[in-house]
Image 1 (cartoon, helix red, strand yellow):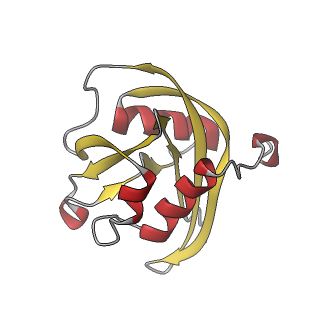
Image 2 (image 1 turned 90 degrees about the horizontal axis):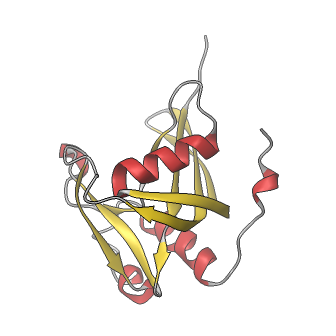
Image 3 (image 1 turned 90 degrees about the vertical axis):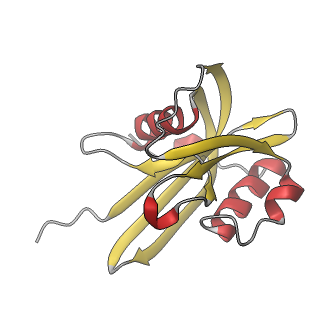
Length: 146
């Protein structure tokens, strides 16, 4: 049996000491806040996928600057791998997020995010990824070979 599992990629966007979260619109997770991230498309590498997902969910073009968090887990009986990148914002496009997936985007301080345990889609993953960026504990992109 051919099995790819679930691969999710996304990023931490920082501006003026605040971090961008997106509010999910999909029925099963409606209203939860998350980092801009989503599933890797077939025939797409993790770098292209992360930039695409970040743009689709936030409206920002970014440069990936490092690896903030990697997660390996089992979700609904399937292998799950998640990679969250640190980023540098290149350009903002006006309100270009997909309203079927994202209700709104909003900037929060790290302390505000740390206090949002019940409002975050995956508390530990989001807080640990942002903490890595906040504390400069980012791994080099060269760890992922292409």
